[in-house]
Length: 246
Image (cartoon, rainbow, N blue to C red):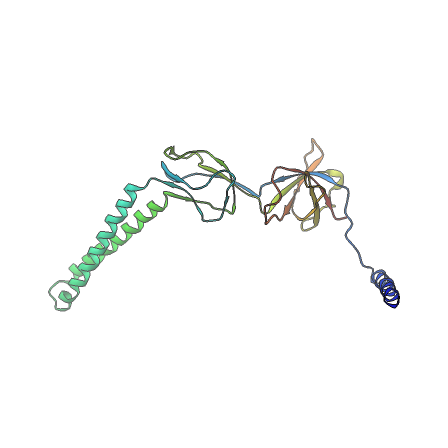
């Protein structure tokens, strides 16, 4: 009995303390319709034309930034790297052999400089062919999901995309706001997002963009909210309801 009375008195004290301190809890405005969209959508294509040798992902797969997703046939480029490497190795051995000859003044400064320059040129040629070989490998530029695979192994690709990738962490929440609410939504404000088909589950986002131009025809402007989605539990493309702080 003593414990119950103690908790009751403590509860009254906390309420009075909150009122005395003028504690303000967030109050949210009327809901607006919204749409969940990917943060980024990328049409991944090759910088150079070629024949696809491997595609290492399928539609629906998650990818990480820097992950290899597609490889083009590269036999010619690999042979060029091997040849350039052989030239570099030969030039290095040649410099070592002639080092003592130069000290003994058996070769001229001009000949020494010529050999060093040739070796430097072969090193640059090796770097060039290695860079060309790298272009035969496509890597994901984002952490995201594969939403479309446009080609198959053995097909020729040019400038057209090989894969479509999207990033859904964070999600973009796009809202069309009536002009009557202009000034009530500011960058950095918190918002509560309620996606459809989530049984009333709510998520907290932050206002990222408030358009400064009003569409005169519709009497509206656009607001974007960033919604964290680290576990990819929220699907892009869903309709939603959103409340902003008053």
